[in-house]
Image 1 (cartoon, rainbow, N blue to C red):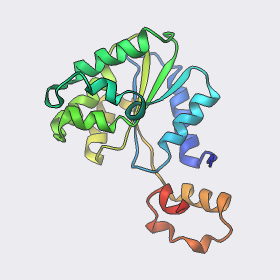
Image 2 (cartoon, rainbow, N blue to C red; image 1 turned 30 degrees about the vertical axis):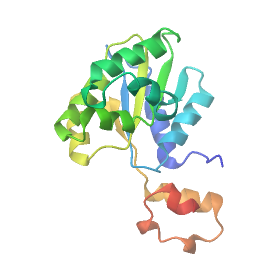
Image 3 (cartoon, one colour; image 1 turned 90 degrees about the horizontal axis):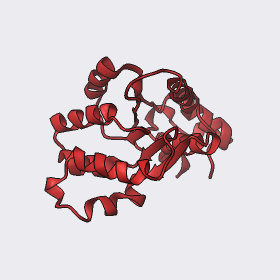
Image 4 (cartoon, rainbow, N blue to C red; image 1 turned 45 degrees about the vertical axis):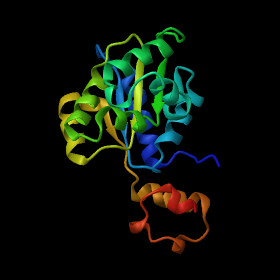
Length: 194
C-alpha cells in the first residue's frame, strides 16, 4: 500500500530539500525516527520524486557484502567509509544524494551497543568527507543524544516524530471510524494498519 505523505513527512521532506541550497563542507544528514513512523516511506517518496536522490536499503542490499570479509568485532567506521566509497563514488555521479535506510544493523555491529561509540559514530557519519552526499536513516537514538548532535550539527540532524496530526491524517485518509483508535496509545504505523 502506498501511503500518502503525512504532515510530519511533508515537513521533513521540505527540510531535507531546503538543505540542498545551503553550503556545508560536509553535507550528510542524519534522519532519526522510531521504528514504523514513516522514515522509509519518506525516503522512497523523495527518491521517486527527485532523481538526484537514490534510495538504498543497506541491510538488504549491502550488509552481507560488507561484513562477509571481516571479523565482526573488528569492524570500525573507516571500514564502512571505504565500503561506501567503493559502492557509490565509483558508480554514481557526484551530484546525487544517497539515502541509506536500514543502517541500524551496521550501527549495532560497529558500536556494540556502547552509547559513547554510538554518538561518536553519528558524528563520523555527519563529518564524513566524500564527494557524494548521504542521508542516513536510523531508529537507534535517545533524546539526549539527539540534543547533543543538534547542538553541534544544527539542522543536519533531523528527528522525525509520529505526531497526533499524523495519526489523525492516517485515520481520515484510510479509515471511516476514528473511534477504532485510541490515538494517544498508538506509537507506530504498524499498529494502525494491523
